[in-house]
Image 1 (cartoon, rainbow, N blue to C red):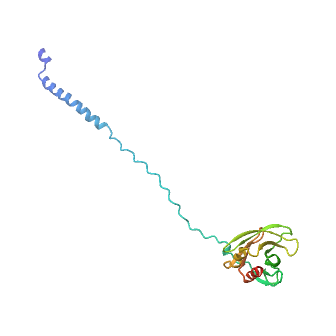
Image 2 (cartoon, rainbow, N blue to C red):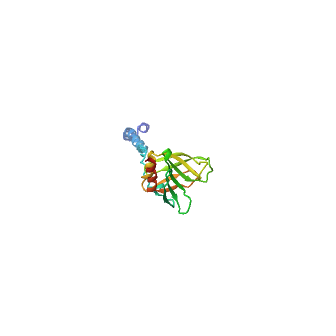
Length: 197
């Protein structure tokens, strides 16, 4: 019996079963291991391309109103005949002129004069803007005569044509004073022509 116990009758079947288990064991281990392994993660999506800079959108703006849209300075032009110094004067009736275009025939010069509170001897500038040209002129307040900031312009200067033929109006500016928006006038053109003739 001892011999039988050493070799039980079903040991052959068990050996067969064990050998089958040994055979399938690596395969089973691989399957079990594969079941435990997580599938590979997909690659992260590519970073989006930086946004393209869009061209700026023009925002409509209200047009700025320049001097051309400003109302005229109250007053009117008057011609004053004088053999030596004809003049076009601008102002309110029965008031001193606030603006004068005067011809000095002997020197063939036009004086552009604007009433001022500055004392005689003051140096300054006069800026003129027409529809076709702008200019800054040196000016001064003379020691004699009316108190006007005065700029001298040669009678042949095309600035005078720009004033005479400006579209509807022109502007005269002196520092420290309110701008004058002056209408184009035949009186001014007449003084210029007489000074050139």
